[in-house]
Length: 497
Ligand code: NAP
Ligand code: MG
Image 1 (cartoon, rainbow, N blue to C red):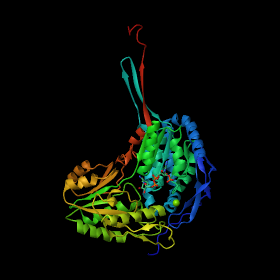
Image 2 (image 1 turned 60 degrees about the horizontal axis):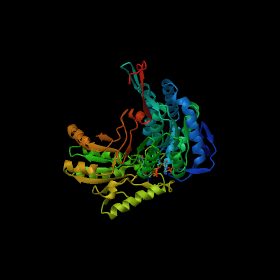
Image 3 (image 1 turned 45 degrees about the horizontal axis):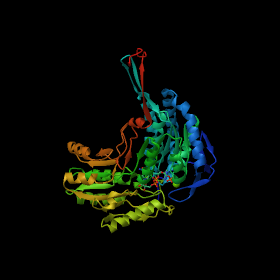
Image 4 (image 1 turned 90 degrees about the vertical axis):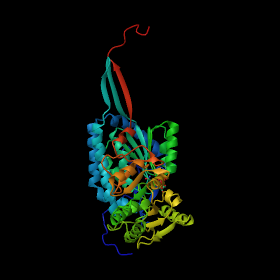
């Protein structure tokens, strides 16, 4: 492994412990703490609260108290405060990016994208709420008003892969709409969220945001089961998503779910192969492969299949695997050993079911980071129905599958339980749009993967979820409409006789 040349150093000054953030204060947890570990070298970074029923109860009580004031705060003022949240996030981003890099093991350069999206989320919803109007019109002998009212206390649970993106996707629309929040970050990556809480402490009124880290089965479960929350929002695995949805069903609570993905990326024969290979490589290796939106099922037209795959492998060999804090690193440590073993296990499953590992498939050692699970970018030749091409691997791996008939490739692309994202590469825009119309996916990116644009709804078809984030539509998921019909006078006496 070559030695690192662009190592980024930031003075982190982490606290020794982070309590639960409740009602504007960090409070000592009753169950103690969980170690926050550097995913690459295994060193202890700090300790985060292991919240349980007691902390959840206090946090939900604080959020209910704060709701009265926050939901009636003028939208202009809420908007200004959300801009302030964006300002403090922007001002402190270098430090937070490094904390998140060490905590998650992801390459430092990626966090430029994460924080750009996160800062933008707060600014977007600070603005969107100003134009989020209900309706009002005169009716016979009176007036009709349709109001958008906040729901109350939102219980929000997020995963470890992109912590600050997740925090912003959850907090910004909920707060803009006048709700208060109790948020549980993932046990494996809570540090940047806890540091962000310190910034929120200076900006938002007490109790508007409460953060309760801990285990999913303790803090997470207690949060979704709490009788005084009014909305559930979850991002993570389908299994836990189903549980959250079931709880919402039993309690008749509104719910949004953003679950897994297994995105097809279809390559037509008219593309510039070098450019297409670059776009495909970004699409399956970014986030170390740990994201639900990655284009991990590559369908390549038979006319260019051999050349494309040869170049894809050559490009995979060039991907720099290294220390996460090196700016030139493109693939680094997975979140933890469990995830690493699961990814390697999938490569075994692939071989057993007859898929062929064309490149990669191994864990590599990065000096000084022997603890971490660094996995080579991996290219697997597979058929569309194999498990390796159907299930979320959550590592830097893609399957390659040959196609020749357009109807056939659309069938294969859609023949999966998920429907979060999809990609298409072709120079023929008519063909691209026609194909996009036939794909069962919440987001379709033509010729540029991860092409997130302002206000574009983000969310899943099929098992990938319920509801949309990132766009104004998210405000609908954090409000309920109230219809008020006012008649100017009572009807005349005896009108019902
Ligand atoms: P997960 O178990 O679904 O975790 C997501 C969040 O839910 C975490 O904060 C977790 O807590 C919490 N949680 C777990 N059990 C819970 C329960 N019974 N009640 C309430 N909350 C609960 O996902 P994971 O274990 O991190 O990852 C497993 C797989 O999920 C991955 O391999 C990947 O396929 C998928 N995933 C998808 C996304 C996505 O963005 N769609 C993100 C991450 C993972 P703790 O983890 O802190 O215990
Ligand atoms: Mg960690």
